[in-house]
Length: 397
Image (cartoon, rainbow, N blue to C red; front, side):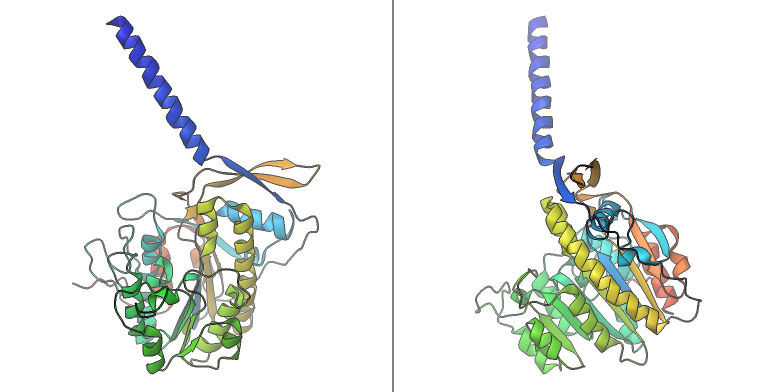
């Protein structure tokens, strides 16, 4: 019996080692990137005197943790430089857990911002009992404000969907697209034509013959599909679908900055103010792939977009800008500096979301209210309060 027990221990130990080795093959992946030798310094933006807020721009950098931002800084503006987003004067931290899991996904994370409530992973605009919660976007529309959603994913993806639809599963993107038609949102810009075209067309992911692009046109939206069409588009309701699925790097597609600038041009014409949500979607996708080069490109795209947003807010004086994330993806760390080549070694801990707190930055009137540690639901509630939306949260019976 003793020998059987010893053999059992050896087998068990070997199995544990094999599992550990297998785990190591999926985590701890190291990559390097070049540190920018020339420092680009930008002055910190000043605090803005508190006054009534007319506009809110909420930027969600999906999957972005502090290491993603630090990597972007080192690669783009050098060790002593500042990204545009790093010039925002107020910083805080956000705790991100979902109702049913300490590791949130984008659906539960975005619903915390849009509705001010905790919900289960995968749920869009509903509480854990599948009761509809009223979003900040919907309250802005009720108040006569302009609204817009911008993303580099499909526009029906979890984050933008959470601001203008209500479904029990983020996978129901065709249903989300249908709900967008009746949402009252003025501007939709992103990818995802596959959920707006009838099933008879190639690459469609609908299971019916509704042509939502035609239905949007019939509802008064101008439809654009390329960067040149976006640039030429005039003011008014706008649906931009620039790729079949998530956006890529095609020259025919607009950048996140170009989409955001067009959205600002349109929604800022409303005398009652606006609410605009902008998602830098693909920092998350780079984290899932453990692809540092991809991640750095997306952080730079985010920062160029922040340059336009912060310039608008500085000139306007009545706009609150909030930058945060729904969660961190990949467990990115900076591990070693090779001084001879001025390169940084990075390591990924995971190909999934992590539960680490994420950054919160603010600029504009009442920005100081976002300093400190907050639950993600509290961020949504603060935004609603500053916009004069009471009561909030609102969950339908």
